[in-house]
Image (cartoon, rainbow, N blue to C red; front, side, top):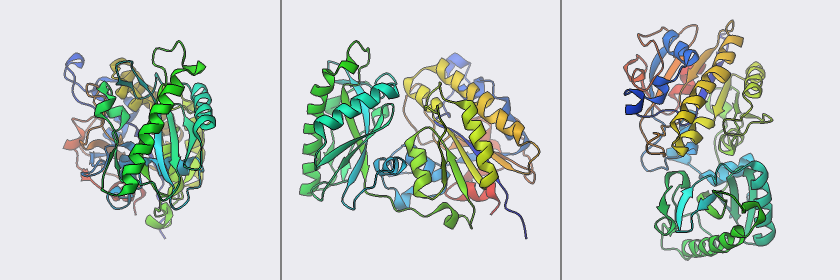
Amino acid sequence: MKEFRKAVIFLPDGMADDPLPELNGKTPLEYANTPAMDSIAAKGINGTFQTLLPGLPTSSDVANMSVLGFQPELNYPGRGPIEAASQGIELADDDVAWRCNLVYVSGDGVLRDYSAGHLSDQDSAVLMAALKAEFDSDDVTFHHGVSYRNLLVLHGKKFSNKIDYQKPDSSQDIPVDQLRLKPLDNSPEAAYTVKFLEELSEKAARFLAGHPANQGKTNPANWIWPWSPGYRPKMQLFSERYAGRKGAVISAVDVIKGLGKCTGMQVVDVPGATGFLDTNYEGKVAAALKAIEENDLVYLHLEAIDECSHLGDLQLKLRAIEEFDAKIVAPVLKALADKPYNFAVLPDHPVPIKLRKHTTTPVPLAICGPEIEPDQVNSYSETLAPTGALGLLKKEELIRKVLEI
């Protein structure tokens, strides 16, 4: 009987980009020094993967569901309930969970910063506890997540998830009045949900403006931003989908952890994993090396590159890409060099630095392993990957390829 092939997928969130004049026509990935990722491309096979699909949000939950082969076009539950699963929040049948950013809205009513200056987790915990004490009721509860990434849950059949919303990280520098929630159907529940949340947001804005934790800040967390609502997820288990294989996810952020919990994958918590450049790289590597002993697939996710892209900070993005290569990919490859494992690298979606938001272009993909015949591509990039022998992969094809199912 053939042994299960093990694999590690390196997932640098939001890394793909467009060519930039200031980089002599190269993308940040092409310009950065990335010998470890280049080695996967040179030793393996290259192509692209379609992560974002028509008719669905251009968000990381959709993209990572796609990479893992869980077909969001059939069973996308919304970002809120996925992150609720990560936090262990038990949703009742009629609870509607929303992702709830703490954001900065300027005095002229413009959404200026989706992350409120990359709010520290300590300040976020203080503000969310204050919101909870002030506004929690039979109708609504607030839940602290990580940094600006928090949750809000509406309770009862009078509420609906059929609401049109705007992603905050795609809406920076736009007046709030142009970004309002809207009902997606004519039901009284949808109309009431919009009315309830608009009134709650206004009350919360007045409350947050006067909170001591926001005083003296350049980008204070002075507004709540509910988005991506949904009901309790019902997703197939990873092991059922992939012939008994076991998987693990390693990430700082609730959306990836939530996908792991919803699909029965092992969720590895790494102390000091922050979702930004100050994350615990060494801890993530150690966690990956331990997890691959017990699992067939390790999904090693890094959020920082996405955050730098949304900030529009090219130098930070270049730094984040190089640190991912040097502090995540290189040490894992070195530690497992004598193992007959497959390795893959791909972002979940592009975030062009000039746009500061997600786009739907297929992402570059490279896979190497002991039985994978290399193609002619010698480095990993958005330009070269589509010329490789792998072609365009979709749906379950990546996971089945790396696990050799």
